[in-house]
Length: 108
Image 1 (cartoon, rainbow, N blue to C red):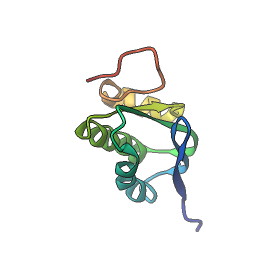
Image 2: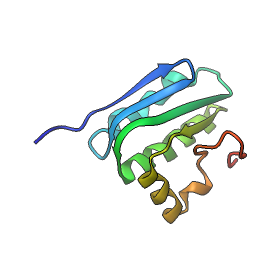
Image 3: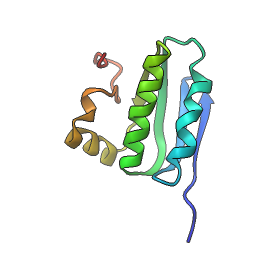
Image 4: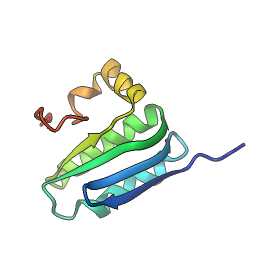
């Protein structure tokens, strides 16, 4: 059986998340956001490199939103995979996440 992998890296625009976001990979990514917050008023997390995501990915996004707010920062999730958008809408979590739109105001 192949192990899932995921990575988080800094880019000029913010962060880039790549790979599989599932119950195997999310626990390793969750605490890594703190190292990128460093006093910035806002940060973007590009999910266009995510190849598969499940409810663990949604939990990661909620956790990162909580971490960012605690640090006085806003996090925007860009290029959120369609299946993750659907899970967020069905569960109502889309009301607290800032996803895909630079134009709409993020929930506060």
